Length: 212
Length: 176
Image (cartoon, rainbow over all chains, first blue to last red):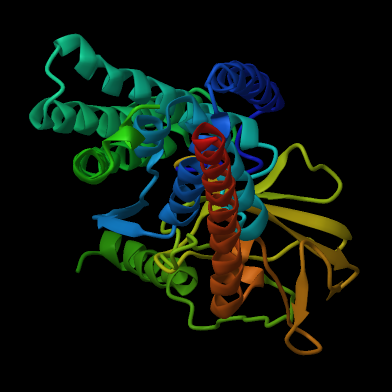
């Protein structure tokens, strides 16, 4: 789902970098408010590695195949640390494997980063329910994992559908985009379940990791 | 046969056979000419071919207007013959569902020259231009990925060590 170079017009590319710049600044400001930001760096670094390799894991959803994104998981576990983690992960994916692109780094970071922060806030809603037990943690982790990816897919859909170049067959392109978007619905369930499993595991073995 | 038909019949025969001479002509003229074609193969990075992806070809003298449009076949292939009179970079863009890439094929006169993002000469007449991770072998990709992952793990270990040292310092200070 990473948008490569040469697909989007220059105005969207610039807007993507501007949005990423703003959100990264806000995230770093939130991170700075932590008592000891260094404490969370090992966790952020390990999940950046997971995000970096996740795009290699392809899941066939006939007739297409999709790959793991894990931005919902990063948001759920890392909170605001997810944004720099995703930005770094995307940079390495683009430079090493040409997955995504350097010109679209801003757009991709916005597309995956903002939904990660949405996922974090979704996961924090479990405290509002007032029952910080395993069931609610699992339910909200699932919603965060699936929701984070879902918001990314919606952003991807609008970016691509509204920027189909005039010289190609728009109807054909739109149909393929619909197919790709629909193929991400099963992936949302997979990533939601994976996020819930990770959150419940951490709750059992090291619950302090779930308190960013 | 009355006299009227005796006059008309030869005309009917002549007109029928005369007309059919053109319609079922057995003479075929063929011409074979050697020309330079460019074959583009597009696949996703997991190896799946980009089936029915939309292809746009831009000529060197007008990179803004599509020179040719088409779609890839079931194997992700698309073949076209560039206008040999236009030398320079022929750009071929393949796009499907927001994914795609552009490859530049330099044509100089009647001969393809090495160039583009990278070029691997296969023989004197056929050259291959790749984009994306196709430049690397699977082993190289795995090594690069492993190096990247180790970088992240190393960062994590480094900061974990820092935390431990800090907490040990704090503990020793509190013991005093």
